[in-house]
Length: 208
Image (cartoon, rainbow, N blue to C red):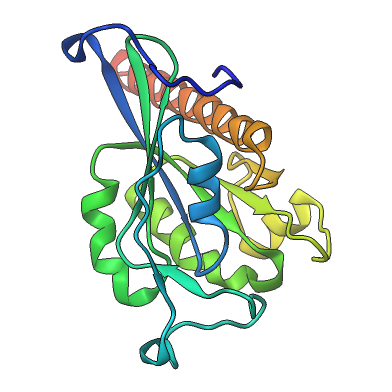
């Protein structure tokens, strides 16, 4: 991915494009909208609305007392890797009342980033469980909020009881370079997982 944003990404026709969908998931207020906004080469589509009294009892502001808005549908961004290869990013809403949207958004997804806040690590369990259950390759990205305590990735892996092959990385959701590296790691993970599945299938066929 070019670190510079292009105002005219991709010169190939739409018919030649190979699109891939990536999901950005995680708990309420973890930085999903920020991550999509940081990396998208086009102005991202955001569905941020102001928090009101109607969210009391539904949206837990513990750890994010300064948060004043929330995603009520999805965030959308795009990255063109070449004239033929495009990544579409979908930030899925973290609150439980919006979980009914996840199946639609996850359909056909190449992989997912589960963004986590170590101050509220429990909030990412639903996302981890969702992708594990459906066999969607994912990684956990620890958003390093200012002033938050730092933990080693292996400590977080143990706390979340993740399989050894699931990457856990540190990131700054505000930084283009940091988000870029997270997505590169995710793509590498997806490729590695597909190679494992292909090898297992070949072994099964040859053993018949």
